[in-house]
Image (cartoon, rainbow, N blue to C red; front, top):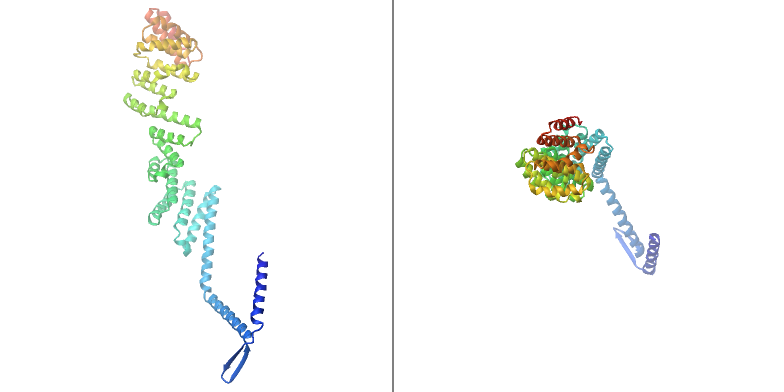
Length: 415
């Protein structure tokens, strides 16, 4: 298409020249000393145009000749710049290929070429990226002193030069990740705290914060961070539920007395308190701190909806109540009798009902559920031993020493 356009333009020029110059009878006389030359006007115009073209070509040739050193310098600088970028790309490729020693050398070579290149010497972004790759490679090679030195150099460059937010955030995130790998959780939390608000709420930053909080044994802050991650769908639902339960259990296990246990329980979210496993751990810890009333209060909502719980959760809740029966009130009797009637063959429910009846000194009612629990092979050994010991206590109250001895012997024989 372009050739056709040029051909049309050539025909147009030819037609215009023929119409304009074909009937031109003008003369041009040139005098020089005693010489005189007459030229047709057409020839004179052609000669002037040729002279202008020759002068322009000569001027351009001279200009190119004079600029040859500058163009040679620019060509060398361009070669250096291309070599530096090639080394930076090579460092990236080697790093992702897990050849960290080669990646570190390539990044250092890119920095060396940058120092030799005028156009690149002021490129702070190039320098910082090369430092990042070199430091990351050194971290993979467990060369912590040189890695930390490069990280300090990057920090100084970021303070001196113009603000480059992505690289600054990337350096801090990498530093926090490296600190966690070094088990230096305090340093990781410090670096994450220096991030801007938006960067600190990114999923990767929150994952790092969660790891650091777990390393520093801060289960409650870790639980809040994990809940945010679960809200942003950073985990699969099953994994999120398991993680939240684990952190809640760790928070309860960190309590050292009944008061701190109560504070921890109040700081948990309603969703955590509605988890049977969490409530059972809290009740067990309360019983260990001689606060069985708190344990019963935390288990009570689950006993009120026992029929809605899965079989495993019902078993867990039932086995936790015997630890908290000390001082149980008569208000529990109706609830326990209803559970015994609803699940007459469930040994875990039977043990809970029997333990509460023994505490209320209702010996006659307690015998049958305790015998059911003691004879069950599905209960854990600890629960079965508890049932036999309660039967022994019941026999002592009735004055049957032989029966009490048999029950204690049966408890001792359970592995």
